[in-house]
Length: 60
Image 1 (spheres, rainbow, N blue to C red):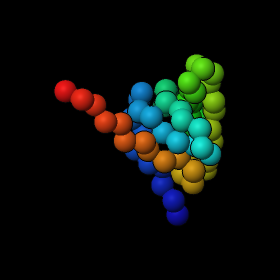
Image 2 (image 1 turned 90 degrees about the horizontal axis):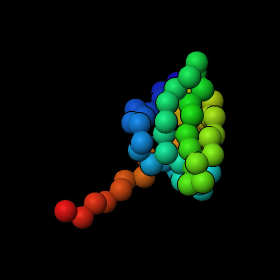
Image 3 (image 1 turned 120 degrees about the vertical axis):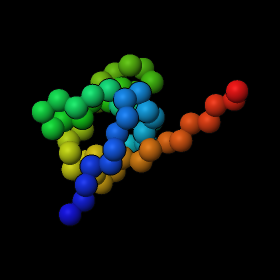
Image 4 (image 1 turned 135 degrees about the horizontal axis):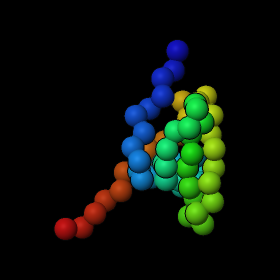
């Protein structure tokens, strides 16, 4: 059985080639925003199978 990856708020993720930022969970629906600040709701199974974390690099 698959498990939900540990999602962190404001972390950048990839879903079907699109970059999304994680906002919150609401009754087993996961809410993300895209670069145009449109909300996307993903189901638990979509998150388990298709979400990939993007590692962001920062310069100090």
